[in-house]
Length: 350
Ligand SMILES: [Zn+2]
Image 1 (cartoon, rainbow, N blue to C red):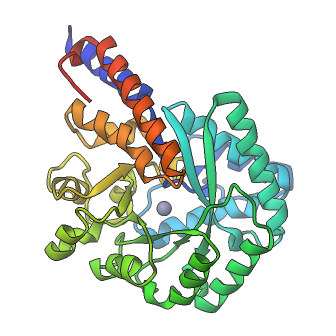
Image 2 (image 1 turned 135 degrees about the horizontal axis):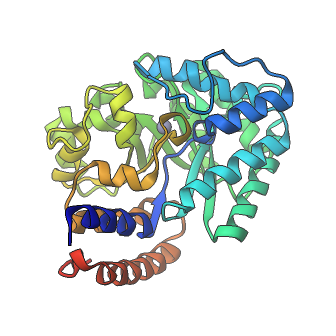
């Protein structure tokens, strides 16, 4: 088999592997084409450099947030939320995702009621499930830049329209100036309300922020978490803790000091080598123009490790334990059948 054929086989295998995707933002998943079409629909003026072939060059997290805010400005009715949800899940399913838990930022859409946004989102989730068999939860996420008091109002809003599709909350936007400890009251109240907890941390914030998210906020998942590699003690403490890290290789190129996900010194490799529970995601695939298959491949891992990463990713989800166990067993079988199908990988055991 030629190297090109082997590469194609590897791509097809990784694409087909059953996976969970748990770090994905509704607004950041919007394609540039949809951004332009929605702007046209609502008569919203976009900057002149926005066209279907545009590739954004994000210098840092703040630059990214500024550009991402364009998507907020064009999501102005219930159907926009249905459409963007459906398109995001369709894209994720086309790269092997079977279960998705995605963020959306209610405070970024001040002209919309929470109920309208949620109704549109749920329609998109139902349409995608019927068409592609993909299941999903939605994670309303607090914009930490609005502060702690606004966080409590955010929680009231989430509680005012409690739907089964919402099982937890998140914390996002510029991390470094807003330490997690400030949101303690929000997270404690959310836990009392029976919500699961995750937060963006350790992306441009230090390892102490990761520790606070677990120890102070009570998170069982950390979105990104890369700077945990700066603290040996924390690395070994979280090895058997059940804490999961939702990592996003392409994002690290744009917003962190780790620019090459295939480099063995990259934080994601250090986390994997330390034995942390890591799973792989796209984060903002519309703006970064990435996909789940490419994210797995970007790490340059041996095939058997990619297979294990994919099959284990469901363990990090907020599905109930019985469902997760059943899916994990089914995915292992399916992954083994895929491995057997592709000639290059016949010796791999999952
Ligand atoms: Zn994110």
